[in-house]
Amino acid sequence: AMSRNGRWRGWDLNAGLEYKRERYDDLVTNFHDYSTIVAPVFSAERKKFDDINSPQKGYRFFIETRVGSTAIGSDIDFVQLRSEARYIHSIGFSNRLLLRGELGTTFTSDFDQFPPSQRFYAGGDHSVRGYGYRELGEGIATIVGGKHIAVASVEFEHMFTPTWGAAAFVDAGDAFDEQFNANVGVGLGLRWRSPVGPIRIDIAHGLNEPDQNFRLHISLGPDLQ
Image (cartoon, rainbow, N blue to C red):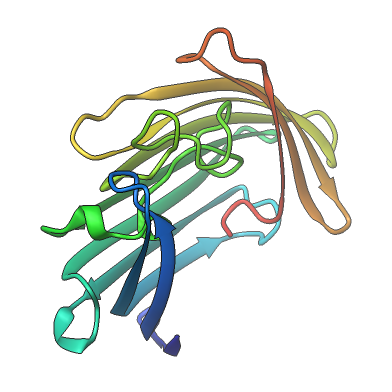
């Protein structure tokens, strides 16, 4: 992959050319298949916050477009759009409201030939907690990803001391082709503003799978990364 970076009116811009050759298992023929993706990639990101590690207010927007074309060597023609948004707002001195969302879609007439690694998946530490990493997507025995993704999260955090706190959250989302199914996860978490950065330890349960055990999710890094 090749890329070039720039900045315009507060936006961090990136333009690149992506080349990927992938071997994967075709679920219809049960044979190995190969796919080549050649696509220009354009992205834009904007951040604003009052503190990089534990902002009391701030936001992050990210938008990415990938355009594959047989005219430049790709096996299929496609356009894929993905966007993410995060927003943080303080409530009083020790409380924060954290909102997160992700939307994505794929336009192509040959989605069956779209390699699984390039499709959308949901679930995991930074997606829908209460479900495993990339557990949500099309397929039953094997999850093969979807054309579209929609994820939302609402979290309330209270700090008992300057370094220790707790949070309660609700996540929901899905990766899908035609029918959106809101997979909901709820949970509680421990927050530690450590010397090396914020650490989040969450226990979550997927409401769409009532017999499933609670899942442990651990993540490290700034809230607006």
